[in-house]
Image (cartoon, rainbow, N blue to C red; front, side, top):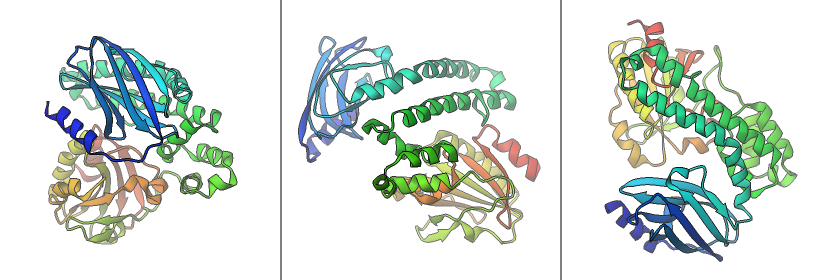
Length: 371
């Protein structure tokens, strides 16, 4: 109940400039009449109503320019959501609880249809993903899951989950290139500057007009087309960071010292797998301090979120703050978009090895540092 009250307060406190009105009629089955349906713009609710006999009507002021919104249903503190790409229109939504988030039907919008097309193309892969998730959950209840090879099979860098993610992204890449001159497609572009390879980035850049190429997004795609993931022997790319006292430092400050290895850990403070890997990292950082320097580059939206982790820094494990890292040119240059990602360098900054996730983290560290 506290969550609903907070959302309602945010709703009444939000002031924005609008130029039109959206009217939504939602017919939702499978929910109780205690469910509350919100229309969100970003994280901010702009309309909400309690479901009554499976129906709710929402009205809100929105821009005439199509944008991404979310229908967010809360029932017994359990959230259900689906994304919309709409403007000041009158639309109807029909869905069962089990249709969320990808099979919700939206009619009446001239803008949402293109998003629905991508959803339809990706639906078979989403269904495979749900089945795989259930299989992993069942395995996690058994001793089989403790075997590194089993975890690698399912959630490793070349595991089944990662393969499905790649399939989803490939469908999205093809969709972008085949539907380029569309407003919805352009909402996808900012999230894909590290998801593919030079061929895709160049193809996107080539489709842009001269004016589009001069925009910040155009310049990002040009940079992406000139960037690639580091491979063995490559030199690290410097990163501007803040230390535990929020003083400016650089990644380069941690090289060319007396440590044989520098482990760069690209993590997120909100990533469960990153937090799981921290315990493994700490074991090695404490035990092999004479030859290992760990640098955790923690991505966060604000310093307050980071502050707890920064206090955990030690002499040989620096937990540094990379504010808004995913919006920087350096992020694009690294071409790493999964947390946690580990890059092991020698003291001179040459890459020795790279791996992703906590499942193989300990085995990789043991390979180079011993048990």
